[in-house]
Image (tube, rainbow, N blue to C red; front, side):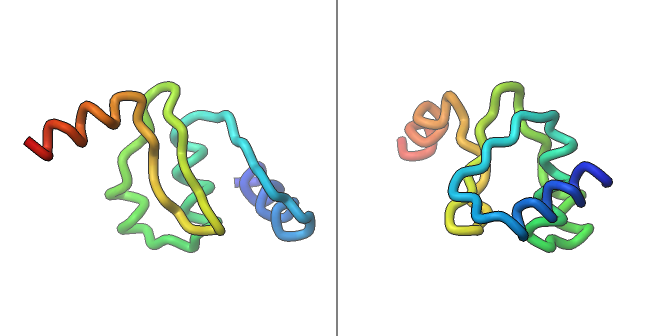
Length: 79
């Protein structure tokens, strides 16, 4: 939690246009919960990222994970 608190302080006090976090999925879940002030229910229901996942945050909005095989999943649902 100290690392998350430190990172949140930096984000709050500095003008940061782009932030890239390379970390374990558990840290990202904890960071998202704190940064977006999500509930414990959200935290428990949010899945952990896959290896090498990219998480998208735009304009301080949580968008979710971008999957390397996203097109395959989208195409399967469209058929």
